[in-house]
Amino acid sequence: MFLAFFYKLKELGIPVSPTAFLTLHRAMKSHLIRTLDEFYTASRTILIKSERYFDLFDQVFAYHFQGAELPDVDGLELDEIAQAMLEEWLKDPKTMAGALGINEEELNRMTPEELIDYFKERLKEQEGRHDGGSKWIGTGGTSPVGHSGYHPGGMRVGGVSRNKSAVKVAMERRYKDYSLSGPLTQAMVGEALKRLRNLVPAGPKDQVNVDESIYRTMKNGGEIEIVFDRRLKDRLKVILAIDNGGWSMDPYVSVVQTLFDYARAQFKEVRTFFFHNTIYDTIWEDPARYRKPMRMAELSRLDPETRIIVVGDASMAPYELMSRDGSIYVQNRSGKPSIECLRSLAHTFPHSVWLNPVPAPMWGYTRTIIMIQQIFPMFELSIDGLEKAVQHLMAA
Image (cartoon, rainbow, N blue to C red; front, side, top):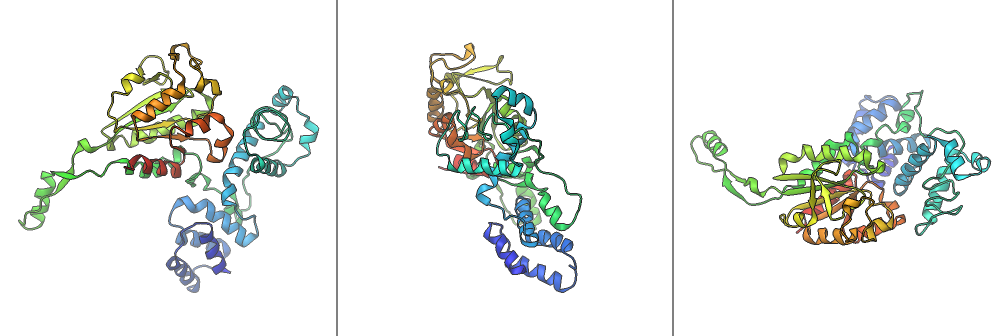
């Protein structure tokens, strides 16, 4: 029974070690664990070494000891997307139904679980972007899933257990925010900072640390030991460009700024700029994008070894990216399409990435995301995505 539990944890990617498993068995043999509740607490404490796996552990525990549905690792992101969409629909269902002319009676017969399953099935079947219609996922249309979709029936997504047994506690999934594959949140800044520390280059240690050399020499009883450090000038320059012009990016702007503020001491220079939707001929140092502009020509004169990190959902009307005067702001129009500005930026700074808060499985449904992916290496705005982005930025 417990061996199957151990192998199921390993099968789903949780790095549980045989040593930890034997430790758990010794605790049971010593009668330190007498109930399922105590086993839940002890096994999670002994077997799981990182909070990133708490949520997945809870799901496997509920599956193994209560017969709950086994987590579909590939489908976890779809579950999160579906639930997020349901929450949005329920904020103002009557207004949404009136605006779209949806048949409320037909959709009202679907349970929340059926609606989520319907969404996931349509998403798996769909092979491209779709606008309008009654079956596929896209913008508009009468399908009950997709942007601006609607389900009029009252429902509740998630919930809180009243019975605090081990299985009920596990099924609450209290540690979803610790998952490294979900969107970056304020609570995860500390964990994300560990990944960002790898962005400091490993240059040669060619500068004598006088204070540390004296300390080591005294500690060695007079035997001289010279300590070398890396020069401060070896620290990287980083430019952070954040899309702060739409409601879809609002939850992430402060998180990203906080993350880089914490990491500022590690870099020689961190400069933050702002844009709306995409980058044209100008970006701004002030969040209002009004008083402190910087032209692309001026930006291109900076050190080409500077690391460029662009943060945005890359979702917009295609003309904003492709038209010569595609910007909705007159002061942004320079006669150049944004896509040319992005290509120039990526060419000038070869160490550049794009971080996107939109889950990767959804990228293929937005034309502008696909186009920007061809210019910048794109990664999810999550801890795992940040780690991969840092690895790419530091590659030779």
